[in-house]
Image 1 (cartoon, rainbow, N blue to C red):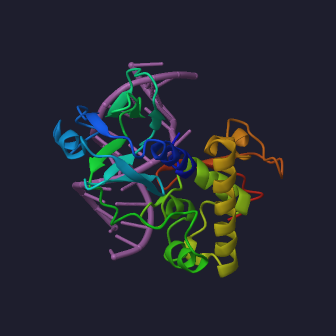
Image 2 (cartoon, rainbow, N blue to C red; image 1 turned 90 degrees about the horizontal axis):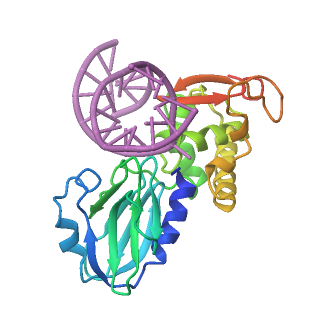
Amino acid sequence: MPELPEAERARQQIERALGREIVAVDDTDVYVCRPHAPGEIASALVGHRLTAAHRRGKFLWAETDGGPDLGLHLGMAGRIVLDEEPIGWDRFVLEFADGGRMALRDKRRLGRAVVEPDFAHVGPDAAEVSRQVFRERVGRGTIAIKARLLDQGSIAGVGNLLADETLWRARLSPRRPVGELSVDELDHLRRELRAAVRDAIRNGGVHTGRFMPAREKGGSCPRCKTLLARDTIGGRTTYWFPKCQPD
DNA sequence: ACCTATGTTGATAC
DNA sequence: GGTATCAACATAGG
């Protein structure tokens, strides 16, 4: 599920774990915890407490009281669960002195847990970037707008579903080269992106978007009633309605 | 069996 | 350097 709205929900879950002493860490999944060896994250965190929970795009991290930051990513299917019984898909777990626990629950194991995460190549958060910076980072070059939105180094947090939802709301073709968008179109795109993120956070996730139900075989546009187009753009399956979103 | 999947990274080539 | 394409990663579900 995870795109920016899901990551924000996960951040809020991490906040509920702040201040609780860490007494044990399960970091034995060497793929999820790479490049750390088993026990490395544990020895760095045991005895400490999380003191703040942050997010940029889909990247999460928690500060600790004197220890290193803990970086978390939900990958393709992860979520953060608090004080729930273990059920087999918990790939990384903090256990607290009060008996509670915080787990990265992730069937596909594409999530990540690392100490001292490096966000040098992560762009500004998609929902918070200023108009000016959005124009500069998104509007430059010749790449298709869909591919640019997915590039976490340009702006962070937009995934495949949110990109399609946003472009549909903004009535922009996913294929348009970014450099051909006017300043007004870029501002409009940013506005619709923020609105899509806000709606998704409020309603429980990106899958609650208005475009999502139409995104299926034989789907028709809620606005123009025409047929769905489908192609691979930016390496991901992309859906749009050419009448509403002309090239 | 084959295909797809809400993500990221690294390799390769123009 | 920018852009495009892929393969890989690990697993589930249609």
